[in-house]
Amino acid sequence: MFKHFLITLSLAATVPGCAQDPSKPHCGELNTLKVGDAAPAFMATDIHGATVDLSALTQKHEVVVVFYRGAWCPYCNKHMSHLQDSLSLITAKNAVVLAISPEVPESAEDIVKKSGATFSVIHDPAYTIMCAYGTAFEMPKAQRSKLKLMGLNVDKANGNEEGVLPVPATFIIGRDGRIKALHFDENYKERMSVKAILSALEG
Image (cartoon, rainbow, N blue to C red; front, side, top):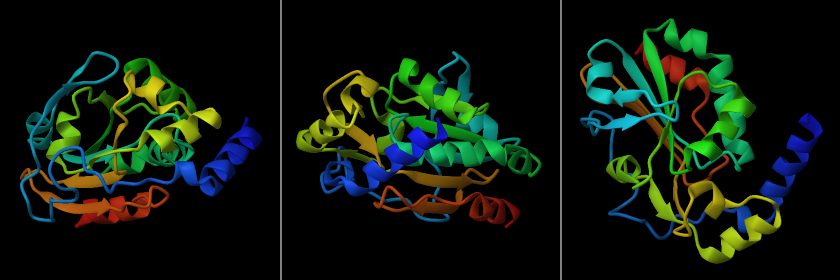
């Protein structure tokens, strides 16, 4: 299994079709939020049917909001695994993790199985949260077709052929409801490390 993961990761890194091209934002502009801004409030349902209310959570906790592309993305699986492996360190700082993507719950179950994630994984079907946080872009059909040849079916994972994905981004939200740290990089291989997350939670 681990060998298969490494092969998939290597292919994803070398095939041009796997490259993220956020040149076409889906709604508004990308990367519009800054440290100190009020985090857009949202209420959603995670893949297990539990209601997630950001405003209610920030009354008691700091919140780590992570946008990921899908279970088909090996870099997302790796990042989610790292978050789960260090979840006890994050929760020890009175913080909770929310992972958000456009993939349908059935597809999201795959990343839960691969990473062992016990934190909330949220399906954003209308891209409402992604748009509010300035992460939504449209992956060209040609790129999605190349990914499909590699066995990475974005359209199936999302349950449509719109090709809307988030730039993988992480937002650390304080109990005052404001963004205290963020990581936004259009290079899909770059993610906010657990070390950086823990450092932000200490700040």
